[in-house]
Length: 478
Image 1: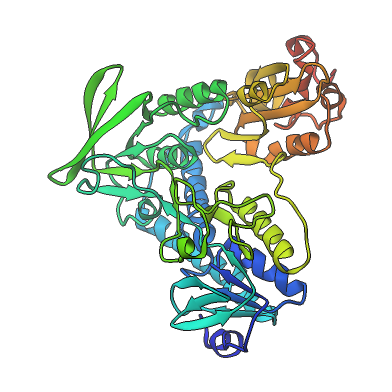
Image 2 (image 1 turned 90 degrees about the horizontal axis):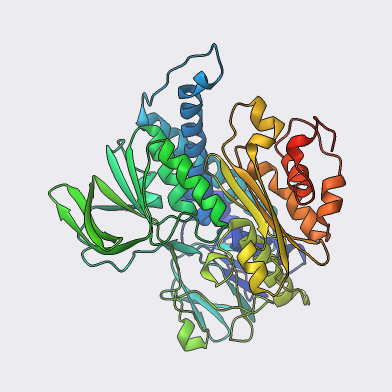
């Protein structure tokens, strides 16, 4: 932190209205919200300023994923007749250095440089914090505040596999810090972090295997899981699903993972194992139990819809909680926590129209209920599934990988959820989120005017698919 911030912004000035532990996306959101409401806030670093997203999560991974997409795009230019191109990783260390430079720039610009503009926020970066009666203890000093928000984030979890501690492993953080491109990797886990990074590394030239207990993206629609598995396998990624992790070990400089698939034992070998089986909450040393703050089996803090913990006056937000592990939901939950804690709010956490994105290629993005969730909630469900070979944009791009699935209530025709697997799915899902937020029916969505030759037009076609065969429509005739 530069000297100006240390001297002018960080000097204690007495008691505070609110103490926020953690200076990532959630912590900053909470602190800024309270400061804009005229409150005095102690923002306690408790880790690198900027938190997970800018330092080791969204920003570094997505810039590397985009680099891999550029590489793959050049390698597959031949899908257009008359084109031919070649590309390869020429300097891995230069890619990593550019990624690090972007991270440092955004950490400074979007976090550190913001603090002097909020006179009500005092930034304290004096070591780990601990909850105490009446406030927080940090750096051997007690910070007095009647309300506290814990926003200490999370970290990659280590799966409980015999021998895993002795095997050569990486996680989502250390993978993006490698000084050389590995020849082979085994990814443990088929969730969003695992599939994003596995495809990225495969496109960079690494031989990649994904091993998962059930299927890829197990929380989304099975049609999407199957389509993504086919896509990755077509790119040379080995996908071993339905596996049981039995043991891991080191064999010289390499890693060996023993799994059981269909009743048979298999040994898989690679340079490293990449642990992408989930995340753990950063709750150690906070004194939660002593303060009566309950956690779940994952160690995450239990919060109510008002973001308050089981201890009155102590709130929590972001990846440290049992809520959605998504950066924009962390900031949203932190804003609610701040308003409810010190600004007289009575707001409730609502993720019914929360869009989510997996940055594979094609991207996978969704909102609302899956078919299984809708049935479990008691709806009489109807669905439509539209493959991208029915979407003019995909045909023009000569890339028909993917599909769109919509879920609706049969009696009311109201949309309940949907998922888009398409190269531009991330930029299309917000239209579906707005449709759910305002209670649109499939008929209304199907009658909405969409621009031609866009991916988002696929939503209109998927909505029309409930009642007609869109393959029989002329362009724009719907």
